[in-house]
Image 1 (cartoon, rainbow, N blue to C red):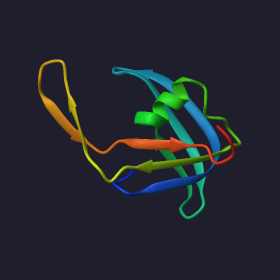
Image 2 (cartoon, rainbow, N blue to C red):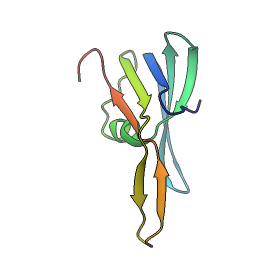
Image 3 (cartoon, rainbow, N blue to C red):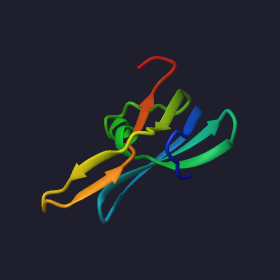
Length: 94
């Protein structure tokens, strides 16, 4: 599932899968979202960092949202890329 600006996923983490790809590690979460049912979400931004730091627990609640404000990222080659960051919170604690 892809989030758009302002979209929110909130629910129980059912599974967390990780792997290694051409661009480094990736993480896919299976979340039982309160309004969408079970969705699969590829971790981005803060969610990916939280997964890499082992902060996402199967069986725990998670809140994932894409910000409505764009941020500009400058690459090493001087080019820029505008994107909407994705945020994460853990309603049950962390």
